Length: 204
Image 1: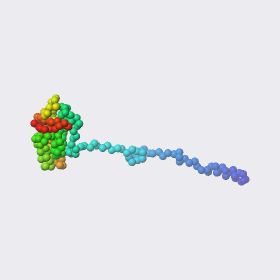
Image 2: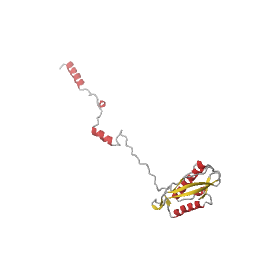
Image 3: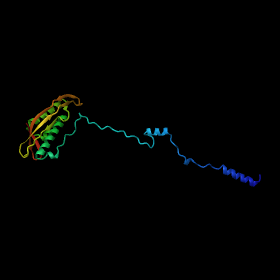
Image 4: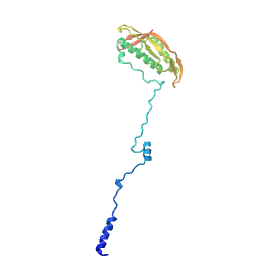
């Protein structure tokens, strides 16, 4: 074969046998339907947000005792019918806490030293606490508070109805060991204005 023809043949073969084009960058991997279903059901799969588990709201224990007594509102420290009404509502709320906590010590700050009914209330609480017992929440409530218009009178007598709802007596574990019967009692709270706030000096 002439030299020129041989060279031409070699050039043609070289052109036909050159590198194949790189198509790896132009292809995308297609996921199969079964793969898509697996990823959708697996929260750990990349690109899938894990479902957020909903938490049930905490239910307060009906037998638990609040660690702190209720605070007296500033509006209770007013020498007015409204102030006296708010004070008595706070006093009964504190009485309920004392019965539930088995601790009568906080009541004395709002009571006069000669209030015999106040002392009887405290004895009832401490006697029950001595048996390692306390009442459930909200033993008492006040209805029909009728504070007289002239709060400057001293003593200031406020009639009301002290309602005792049927209340469980509990042991330290919260188990019921007794029951207090429901009752309604007409009472009159004798209040004294100390200059800083109200004080219960008698319960008639």
